Length: 184
Image (cartoon, rainbow, N blue to C red; front, side, top):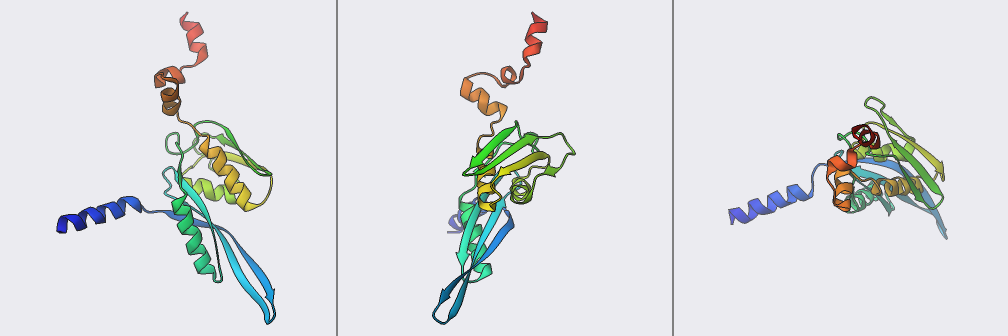
């Protein structure tokens, strides 16, 4: 009996590691009814473990805390894993796109910091990226900016992933083309 409880506790700890969350936007909407106005709230939240996993969610409710709770739950269910170089930056430059929102993300040297605006900054902070240069083009809508950022991050591939896909060794992938000419 005690063994079953220990197993369940261990499983719950593995399923719910410590996540950080960031409230990106909150929107108040009103509905005009016969007696006046009814207000509702929509929240946009980004959640991540700051070690390569990130997700976003949106929630709607009559109260702000309930909307934030719903958004956080949805974000935890929709997390993606992104490979990071040295645990601090992207492996390569990438572009993301969603609707009219376009983002450009570039890997950066150590010490650069997160150079990105608004919703993109929240995604990078929750992901655990420390050095990145990013620019949002097109839509200023925070929902589309986050979706475009996640679209670009899904395209991110580590040298190990590329080597597995091509059936080669990691050293062959990372070898510079100039080095082959010098050896010959």
